[in-house]
Length: 143
Image (cartoon, rainbow, N blue to C red; front, side, top):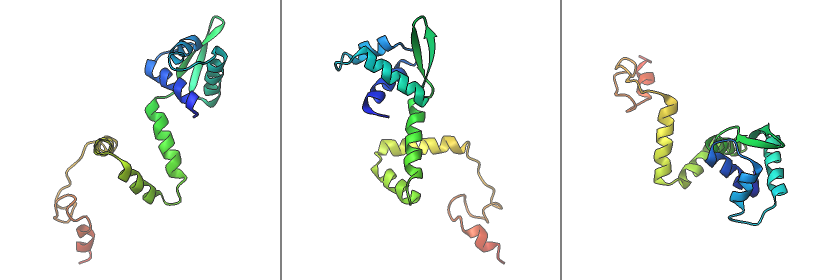
């Protein structure tokens, strides 16, 4: 997504409702000089790319985001990661760039994806506490 497309989508995501070209134009004009036709073209391009849907309202359209900004960011990260020739190294480098706040958010996200934690029974772990020595159960099974 280009810089102007991002500026337009930022407003669509922020307002979280169907918007007109005029509304986006008036907000963008507070920061820069821009023509109505430029904003109309950008919204049409975003529609063609599948980022917004539109519904006719009289002679104009109202545009609404198809997905959230978070979903867009996730798609960007996934695309970049998929293009890496060494995904594990890419993740290590990415995690190294994160702030403490971002790492905490990542931990929370992993917990959400994994669901509620269950405590394994001693027989499931070969007698060790969960996570203390994950290889011990396999080593003990070879009696």
